[in-house]
Amino acid sequence: MDLLLLSLSCLKMGVLSFYLFLSCFLVVTHGSPSDCVGERKGILPDPATVSGLWNLIAVSLSPNSKYQSDDIAYVYSKVSFSESELNCTVFSNPMADTNGQLYEHERIPGTQAYKFKSTEELAENYTTTLFLPHPDILICYDREDNVLNGAYIHSRGASLPKEEMDNFLEWSKCNNLSNITVYNHTLNDAQECYGLFERSEDLKGIEGCETWGLVAKASNYADKNYHIRLLYSAKLELCKEEEAYTVKEIQIAGEEKTLMELKYKKGAKEDKVKLESFKTGTNLLLLGVQKDNQRTLFLASKTSKAKQAVLDDFEIKAHCFEATFTYLVPGSKEEESHAENQ
Ligand SMILES: *[C@@H]1O[C@H](CO)[C@@H](O)[C@H](O)[C@H]1NC(C)=O
Ligand SMILES: *[C@@H]1O[C@H](CO)[C@@H](O)[C@H](O)[C@H]1NC(C)=O
Ligand SMILES: *[C@@H]1O[C@H](CO)[C@@H](O)[C@H](O)[C@H]1NC(C)=O
Ligand SMILES: *[C@@H]1O[C@H](CO)[C@@H](O)[C@H](O)[C@H]1NC(C)=O
Ligand SMILES: *[C@@H]1O[C@H](CO)[C@@H](O)[C@H](O)[C@H]1NC(C)=O
Image 1 (cartoon, rainbow, N blue to C red):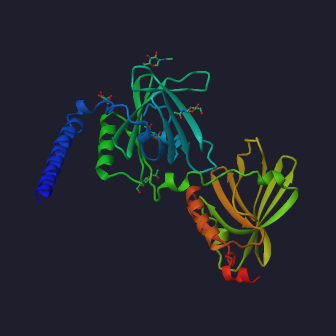
Image 2: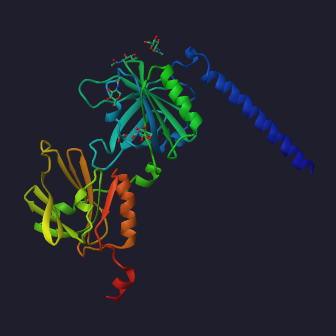
Image 3: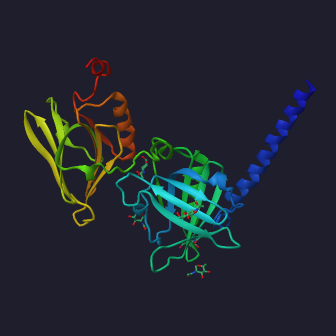
């Protein structure tokens, strides 16, 4: 009984000192405008708390910043942090040029700042400092030639507590980082998408032409060819001639109709076409195609059918591909029991 009372009062004291701590903290962060200028500072965070996967939730940039937020379309990053080094690998959809890009930094001795190691001739003078208001929240402050010009707030989860977000927005305004972008995560992208797309060498092995039955496709634009009431099937035709590929998407509703025909040659960037195949199950093909700003992920199969588990997995992949529209070709779901009887 006494022990219980004792531990209860300890708990109360703990809560009280927590509130006292919190109110000091609030005074510091919500004080007069002059108090909010500059980075929120803490001790150098513990590497184990910083390293790992983070969802990017919001970015605030100075209007003078060379990079604006459409250059920063990444959705999550993998941070690897030590006393002397800070590496960030940024990820978005697997067709993006910046997907998987590594940014290396090294600590400036005697400070908490990490300097960006530029690979370009004209070394840019960028530094980053980190602040963790909470073990699940990471803020990176960027300076260019020692002028604060951007801040990035990340979360271990898919969102941030409203109060943290409000603090960040208020702080950003106070520091004239007025160009603010908020990223919306409907899933925990860092957890769901990391490692989901692995490049495959499937395409290299093509000899002549191959035909695959289309099972499903997902794209970042609506394709009205798939908004039809007729029963249809669809196929992909892939041809390879030396290093040049031709991809055809053909829909069959009574007669054959070529919906898309693209030519791709590795390394030839001027035609703005990208083709990438990703690892998937046997007798399946997972193909990413990008032309200008249109991006499509195709799931095809030798038998024109795929199991429910493959379709469920495709749904997540479509999300991570940043595709908003998903189309399932009628009759392409393989009935498990039916398959076993064959
Ligand atoms: C803010 O960012 C947007 C999107 O990247 C960009 O188009 C715009 O020019 C920026 N605004 C200012 C004032 O820099
Ligand atoms: C950062 O990346 C470089 C190059 O890949 C690597 O040598 C270094 O060990 C990395 N540092 C950390 C802290 O992961
Ligand atoms: C980078 O900026 C820091 C801080 O202003 C300065 O001390 C340093 O000399 C600069 N380095 C280069 C290469 O411009
Ligand atoms: C923000 O901009 C205003 C108006 O240009 C200026 O007076 C103020 O000093 C700036 N604040 C900071 C923190 O740079
Ligand atoms: C996130 O959602 C808000 C509100 O719906 C919207 O204004 C904003 O543009 C979205 N952000 C992005 C990066 O799409």
